[in-house]
Image (cartoon, rainbow, N blue to C red; front, side, top):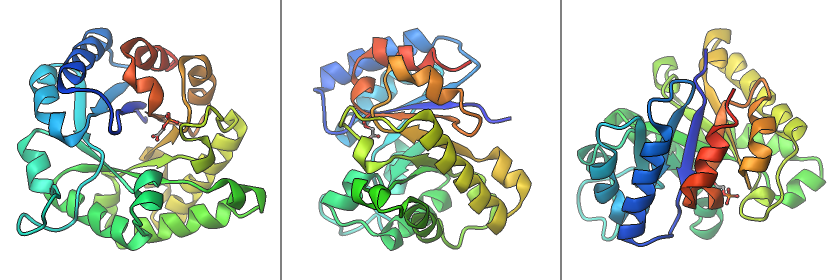
Length: 251
Ligand code: PGA
């Protein structure tokens, strides 16, 4: 049984006060829901303020990135022990914006994933193809490569704590969404890769989120696909009503 996870990636948006207000509204709206889990990812600087609001609620929190190293002399960075100190449950790793804007390779994402797991955090590891890659029929190959590289060398127990997010890069922030069939196909493929490397049990228990222009109007159909176990939401997570509208799409 996979409990869907609805995750809001606030990216580099909002003020501290807006983060606090949004967190309050999300926690109120989620209430005691048991049919899904919710998590929010504010800008790192505001995680502490958001944690203060969410403590005792059903909403978990985390950061959008971290480094594998540290603590120590790594100017400007944040590391796993700091996330734990702030009560983070999750950390998003290998988001396509990190990969394309900051040069994160599968190898770097893999190091971060291992560091997060070693610290007791649950990594949400993102994979996804570019538009040109989809158009040239390379989606499977790219997903396989990112899966193998970003998630290399994890024990079964470690992998059991990983959440995967399939985010086609061409659908992020563009208003374009993968069709439910396109999403389902990649998710089913990922599940097969997990079964090949580990076993059926792990393949059936791993949560695979879809991300890329998820909104209240398309969430229910995406979330009803058998292998889609939640959503990683960017733009629409900045409004409590939209985020909760997406969560309402969970059956
Ligand atoms: P979007 O972003 O919902 O704004 O497309 C998704 C993401 O980047 O996780």
